[in-house]
Amino acid sequence: MDLKPETLAEIEAAIPKYPEAQSAVMPLLHAIQKDQGAISNEAAEWVAEKLGIAPINVLSVVTFYPFFRQHKIGKRHIRVCRTLSCAMAGGAKVCDKMLQEFETELNAVSADGEVTIEFAECLASCGSAPVMLVDEDLHENLTVEKAKEICDKIKAEAKA
Amino acid sequence: MAVHPKEQRLILKYADEPGYTPHIDSYMEHGGYDMLKKAVTMEPQAIMDEVKKSTLRGRGGAGFPCGLKWSFVDRKSGKPIYLVCNCDESEPGTFKDRQIVHKDPHQLIEGIMISCFANNVAKAFIYIREEMPYGAKILDQAILEAKEKNFVGDNVLGSGYSCDIVVHRGAAAYICGEETGLIESLEGKRANPRIKPPYFPAVLGLYNCPTIVNNVETLCNAVHILDMGAEEFTKIGRPNNAGTRIWCVSGGVQRPGYYEVAGLTLGELVYDICGGPLPGRSIKAIIPGGSSMKILKNGERYKGKNPDGTDYNWGLEDIPLDYDGIAAAGSMSGSGGMMVLDDTVSIPAALANLMAFYSHESCGQCTPCREGSLWLKKITSRMVHGEARPEDVDLMLDVAGQIAGRTICAFGFAVAWPVQSYIAKFEDEFRKYAAHLSDPNADRQAIKELACNG
Image (tube, rainbow over all chains, first blue to last red; front, side, top):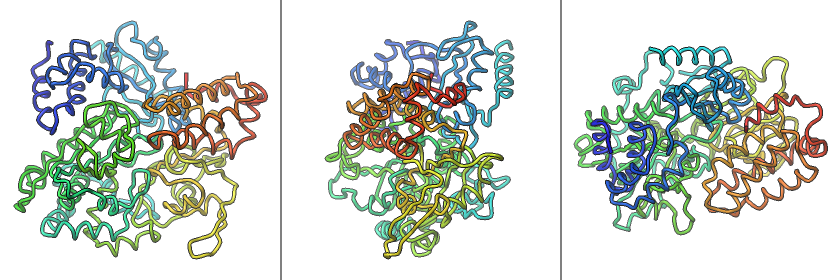
């Protein structure tokens, strides 16, 4: 396991926060996924060893939670909310525009490796629907035009 | 700062004030942490009594009295008592905790610390959903600031009482909002809810120790109950529905958003505060408390007897906007997430959207829920995509009836209630689909976009 020093520091800081080591599974997986882009079998075994639990107990967590993944995605993670309030406000059109701009399909890595676009379930911002997350940033009150602007910005950042 | 004169802001009093920041200085300039200072000079039992007297009910969904929940905690086991703040806010339609965490995190921390002191808790967790990454960072920063001022950590304000707060991030699973699923998740496992009995959190919760799980908004109320006293608190809103509530309104209204109110009717919120439907449209139905709750149809009458023996006969707009009012209309106020469906919305398509949600979010532990939610997704999906079958309406009711009440947690009801109530109130729409493969007059593209299920 070749983890960045700051990831290792984050991991060492997370474990003592909990009365029982197994509780640190999720914070560790968050740290490793951020560092490596996905959770490999090697990473799951490393976490198991670190916390003194069986590798299957780590894998069962990885496979349960939608945010944890075993395969890498595009450099930017785009999640468009599809649940009712966003759907009523035009979330599907926003998602279609994003897919069209990056010439990709839902849940796939775009050909240039730049993005993965997914539908997300309710992002808890229904009053400003439709919304989407681009990595950690929430974009609200979206329209097809705004979606295009966001795509342009992502493309410009990719070139920079 | 209220955005509408009919609002009565307590929790969000300062949140939208210009210049108000999540920093501890902002909070302290507005009297922040004064109630924690007061709390640590009181007897813990006195705080518990005050919360019980306030009749505060949980703001997360079930509306269980907070003081009663606290009173169930096993204090004789000799094991540590934990408190978990449920900030998993993932019920579709709900976005109130987001406002508190992002704009006034110290109010939540003060509420947690007061509640922890009252219950002799030495370790608290805030379980925040993954999709609020900034919220988690804001809370981490706020806890650091509070530790520097000795409001959190060892020997709080020199009182001899110590308590730490840990922020724990979820990973995009709705079921973590269910309190025993949340506890499993916090233990580092799949978030499969636990069976009750024996796993009542107050007795066998986190690490099989007594545990209190409270919603963000509920915990913030502890600050205000201590500030104004239980008696004053009970004067806000109707009896048994004390305090303000933050309602989140989305969908077909002119001014969607979050509004903190008390003692209003549903009509005052939707028409006066939110401006009613968009021009040229009308309100068809309202989902009152998050997507799991039974739908209310515009035009129907809600009749029954009040506790004092008098009769009530309400239209949709007359329903008192609180726990008991919405319950009397046959639904629940849930988490306060109100979705307004206007006359452009196809009810079968809306249901197809929600069934895609529930089948995705079922934890898979109980067969009726795991299989039933998937069936319901498939049936509603084929219905809106032009492949409905004549038997589909009855099949949906049959499947939903086999889920409700036959699962470990309340998720089963959350799947079944929308199906049962939408069909009960809009049966003609569903029958039209079932009889003709699809609604022959419907805009298929619009329906596909609303169902939004691939």
